[in-house]
Amino acid sequence: MKTVFGPVPSRRLGNSLGIDPVPFKTCNWNCVYCQLGRTSPFTLERREYVPRVQILEQLQEAIAALPPGAVDWVTFVGSGETTLHSELGWLINAVKQETELPVAVITNGALLHLPQVRRDLLAADAVLPSLDAASERLYRKINRPHASLRLPQLLQGLRDFRAEYGGQLWVEVMLIKGINDGLRDLQALSAALETISPDEVHLLLPTRPPAEPWVEPASEEALQRAQFLLGRRARIIAETGGAFSLSGDSDVAEALIDILTRHPMREKDLLATLTKWTAEEGAALLGRLQDQGRIQPVSRRGERFWSIAQGRY
Image (tube, rainbow, N blue to C red):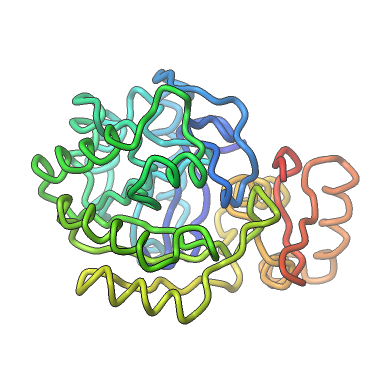
């Protein structure tokens, strides 16, 4: 399986060439809304999970195979937590030497209390950490962090990073119906965000299959309330759908696995992607990969998605 994948359409980053530096679901959170399922292994260990030279070589190959203008951002986005890769700082700087494309890092932010992690991220053009709650109770209910992690660490790490970082800091908030979308919880979150001073606050909804079946997206009314309470920085981020690009990949099945490992897809979007490259074999290919135990269908609010078979829902 490749570490570099895509490009995929992103809600905020246009066509994003992804770099996943950690093995599947290697994370320090076990979020109830995670589109990749429940976390295993659960770890705080930072190490070179994938050799940095191997990642860089794959990036060079991907950039060489894509036509000019095909990519808007290079994005470090893990199927687990990106900052668990101990050479992330080296990788960000190496990418910036290879291309003039801006570099983004999507992270849960849980390790930003560590000075080395903050240093690793300083060269990125945009960093997108999460903050779904402003109370320890909700933090543990929603993000289900490693036992040694606490909310004050997360908040202080975000504040310290903001003080040191000159790029774009976009904080993500996932709004879950009946959990963190109430007036008092949003007011507390707004107060916490004021102490962090991000450039933007991105309001997201769990519209793909969540780890826990009871998770539902907040209502439109709650979403609008959150945007009002969180102030001028808050943006509602609509989900991006449609076909993905598999250009530059000679093995369509493997390219598809690479994407589904990081991004479950609606069946209609998946078939649109496959039709472009295997016009008469789209559905048959899905069937073969399912029979091989490599992918699985997941139902979500009346829609059929496809995910990697290892996903635990």
